Amino acid sequence: MCVPAAPDLTGRALDDRYELHAVIGEGAFGRVYRGLDRRLARIVAVKVIKPWWAEDTAWVERFEREAQLLARVSDPGIVQIYDIGHAKEGPYYVAELVDGESLAERLLRGPLPAGEAREVAEQLCDALASAHAQGVVHCDVKPANVLLARDGSLKVGDFGVARLAGGTSQALSATVAGTPRYMSPEQARGRPTSAATDVYSAGVVLYEMLTGEPPFMDGSAVELGLRHLQDAPAPLPRGVPGDLADVVDRALAKDPSERWHDGAEMASALRACGQEPLRGAVHRERPDPEGHEERGGTATIVLEQPATVRLSSADRLDTASAAAETRILGGRRPPASGPGPAPSRARRRRRLIVPAALVLGLAGALVAFLLADAGSNTTVPDLHGLPRGGVEARAQRLDVHPSFASRFSSSTPGTAISQDPSAGSHVPAGSTVAVVLSAGPPPVTVPAVVGQSAETARIAIRGAGLHSQTALVAAPGTSPGIVVGQTPAGSQTSPRGSTVALRVAEEPRWRPLTSFSGVDEGRSVVFRILGRSWRVSYGMAYQGTCELLVVCQGPSAAVRNMESGATFGSFELGEGAEQTHTFAGGPGLYRIDVSAGNDSARWNMTVEDRY
Image (cartoon, rainbow, N blue to C red; front, side):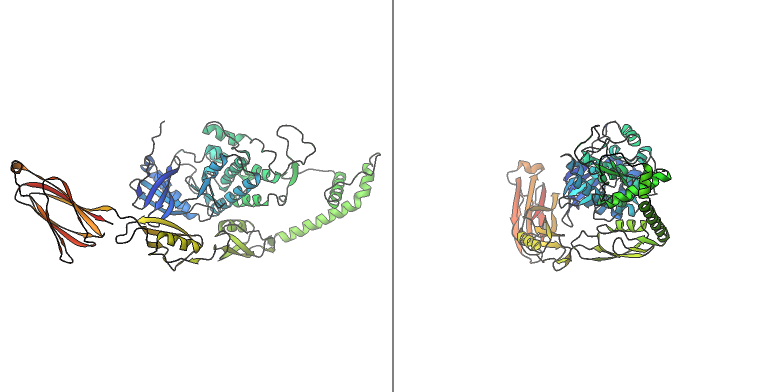
């Protein structure tokens, strides 16, 4: 089926406020433009619903719900929404414009180094954690919806198919929402989604960052869905660290219950990569994907959950003794004493029975202590760097309750910068952890720049640690290039690094003010002039018998200043080409009186103001 092309709205102004400058993105549901908010002189992104969807009430409600979801999820890692409206061109919403590129554009240049991929995935999962903590599942996590700002930060956008956890059904009508290459197995089946759905898609994105392409590339939407349901991804490159590979493996589990529970858990696992082994895991060597044995190098290590193995009493004793020796020797087995026959099992058992019994006794005491303590105490999690939603989600899992305060800091606004008790402390379950969130850098005083030249104003604003955006506006009586307004106003405070919108007088131009006409009749018109000069353009043509006469007497006009009473004289409208009279009377209230004349004539007149 051929889908019609949506009209390009570039050059339009929605609701006479949001100018649409250029198309910067497009999906099946809407088109995104780079735009300008005239009122706040702010560069924005404007998403406009496509016209055939605007005719469907259910889809319009979905579009508005997308905007409401974006507004509901407040986090530095999620695109901020500013406004929603319904212009004659269709429903739209206005959001912040991220200065940078999408992850999809970055991946066109090839895969990312493992360390950089881990950092991007961690930021992505932190943002998703905030949405998950507020009951929102994105359902369409993919590189095109991950925006990389020039300052190194990351933002997630386009919640167009997002679901409220436990809320609406997976599909509108019979449509499965999502993008096939990044779709979880449960989405492919049309089953309900959860935070683990986003974890799977984030795992696909991380896999693509490490390899350069998603695990499943080819085939129709149905074929890709089946591959997500049934097939295992190809092995990751051998250079990928084992702990990072383990995160990918768990995120791509077919069963949602075997994945990380939500974005907060996956972000925590990514932060732990390269620091220490995951608790409760054992090491295994990753097999060579090409079937070759690597010699003379370091084997790649990944983590997996330990299997349960039944041992005889004799084997358990030998195993415990060997483990004790290995720990004492710093991970090395004791060297052989020399050539000769290996000691018998009975001799080894007699020699190691004492240290083995000691190890087992200590282990039993430790287990008993942990079981006695588990019912009343919990460990305070590390909350540093998490957004508020991530703090709440992680604290809830470990049965502590956060209380929030804020202070100015150079850290990302809205993220945790300190906590009390500190991470790792043992406290009674249900205890309160005091968390301080960054309020960003302390605010600065906005310079008052109205009346200054635009260049002077920009220098002053930059010197105060702020940015400026300029919009040219009509400013009658003001010299071009002079600042006539600013937001925020001078002497107010604003966060360091925020933007001051400047309204600057543009070059004067002729602007139509009023037009009027008549046939064989006189007329008077009153109007107000704002500029320093104005002009009247007029035209007239005789009718009937006057066309046969040598001399005709047609209409004439007289101009008067209603405030001063001064008269600017009168003039004949005369037959022939259009005429123009320019006046330098300046601002004021004026009246033009047109008399009909003695001969039949048709005339018209236009007044233009210059400012």
